[in-house]
Structure formats: structure tokens, C-alpha cells
Amino acid sequence: MEDKNQVPGSPESDTPAGEGALGLDIGTSRIVLADGPSGHRAQSQLNAFVAVPYSKMTESILQQNKMVYQRNGKDLYVYGNDSERFASFFNAVPRRPMQYGVLNAQEVMGQQIIQAIIERVVPRARKSEMLCFSVPGKGEGTDTNLVYHEAVLKNFLQSLGYEAKAVNEGLAVVFAELQDENFTGIGISCGGGMCNVCVSFLSVPMLSFSIPKAGDYIDNSVAAVVDETPTRVRLTKEEALDLSRQPKDKVTSALHIYYEDVLQSLVTRLREEFEGSRHLPKMDRAIPIVLSGGTAKPRGFLQKFEGMLKASNFPIQISDIRMASDPLTATARGCYIAAMSEVR
Image (cartoon, rainbow, N blue to C red; front, side):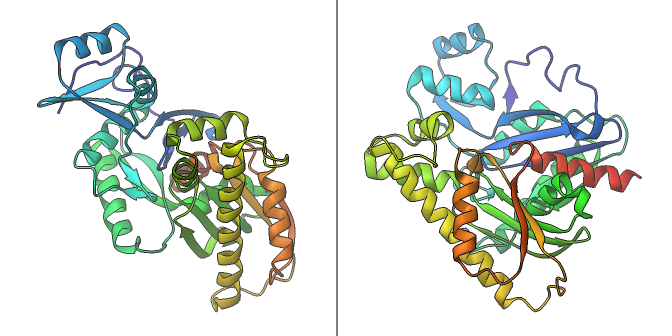
């Protein structure tokens, strides 16, 4: 597949590699790279693309607007951040190379597109540098897919010259946010495809799992019941939703309903896992919970989760429930910390 619009300043042209370590969050909705001092320098691309039939006029429009795209046979593929801008021009719905946290088997071009998106943020290694990338926890029907997903991404990142290592997404949140607690606590990442949970004791993952309900489930469910497009629902969710206030119209009312459904599913599964696990050490003190991910960003999310957890008769003591310092980059920063520990 030929890249027809290599823009100046992209990682392929002049972005230097990280200082010996990189952290990469490969999420269903976004791919985020963390590097630089303490992993606080981050850049991201939408993990999405739009496919349109090739024509000279369409290609001319893409070039005039300096959009990044690839041509493959009779189709043009606009990907990454430009996919959303292009979709708004043509009232198209962006597609995803990933679904429910893993590679989307229904997208024939999915692997090639996600590789192109990753190359937008990840520079080719100058030497054998360490790169840790996020993978979801095991969940309903994802176990065999997860093995394939991890192997494909690892092989691709190795082809860029990195020593690549997978890190559980929930554990990465613990690494990013619970250093003062000796990396002991519960990290929860609520992304586009799923919610990932990891219980860590002194940085060792003791329990991890995922549920296939998160941002995409909310967007698609709301869109179906209010006869709206998922893209418009997502924009409403990201720009105006306040879960601490009463809904003002049918879209926000449906958003409240499906957010409560996701949170209830998450809290119920978390309680069941704690009650049924024989592998957890005996906790002699209360532990914290950290929430992260784009789906956790609306105002009032933290308070709703906290209220549901308290009402669930949770089997262990929780010291506090907090939001990550930057919910959108926490996983990438945690992967960076993991990579730095490997380097040291």
C-alpha cells in the first residue's frame, strides 16, 4: 500500500526517537505515545480511517487540505486524526482497525491501516530501544484474539527496530498513578472498546480482566435508540455531557442510561472477581482505585462510580477513588514507566 502524502514533521521524516524508552497506548479509539522527561510528552492519533473510491478529484481535495492518506487499488484511505476531519466533509462514518480492544477481524485493511497510524506517532528506532505497549485484559470471547493481537503488534514494533514488550492496560494505569503507594491498588482504564481492570500488589499484577462495554458501546447504543449517528453522539458525550446534572434532552438522557449500565457492569464484575479469586494476597490495609481513559472523562463519572461501589458491599476496604492526572495519557505514561524500568 502506497503512502501518497508524507507530510513534513511526521515521525517518518524528522521526529527523533525517545531517550532509550517509549510507552505506547494502542487503544480502540486512540493511539498515544509517551516519551520525554518522565513520559509527560505525549502525542496521539485517532485509531480510525475512512475509505472512499479513488478519483482524481478526491485525491486533489486530500492534497489541497494536506490530509494523510494511502491509496490501495481503487480506494483511498484517510487515517488517523485526518479521518475525522475528512468524515465531517463528506458526512461519512469513520471505521476502526480495532474492536473491543483487539484487531478487528472484519476489517480486511485493518492491520495495514493500524500500522500506518502507529508510524504516524512512533519513530523508527535508532538502536535497539525498549518500547512497552498496552494490551487489554482477558474478557468475554477475547482470549484467543488477544494472543493474535499481541503477536501482530509486537512483530510490527520489532520491525521498526524496537525491543517490544506488552503491558496490561490496567497495570499501566497503576504504574502511571500509584508510585506513592508502591504500585499497590486497582487501575481501571475505561476506553473506547472495553474497560480494563488490574489489581496490583507492589507492582505485581494479581488479578486482571476486561468487560466489552465502554465508549463505543455507549455511542452505538445511544445512536440506536435516538436515531442519531454514533459520531454525533460521541461529540455530544465528549463536549457537553455532565453526569452530575439531570439530562436536558433525549440524547443526554440516553447517555446517562447507558453510562449507568456500563458502570453497573463494571462494579458488579469487580466485586465478583474479588469474591471469587483465590490468588489475591490478604490486604491488611485499604487500597486506592484510579480511573482513567476517555470514557471516564465526563464530569460526574467519578462520583457515580464511587456511589455504585459503596452500594455494592465491596469485599475489601478502599482508601480513596481518584481520577488519573491526565485520563487520556495515563496508559501511555504507565507503559513508558514500564519501559524505563526495563532499560534501567
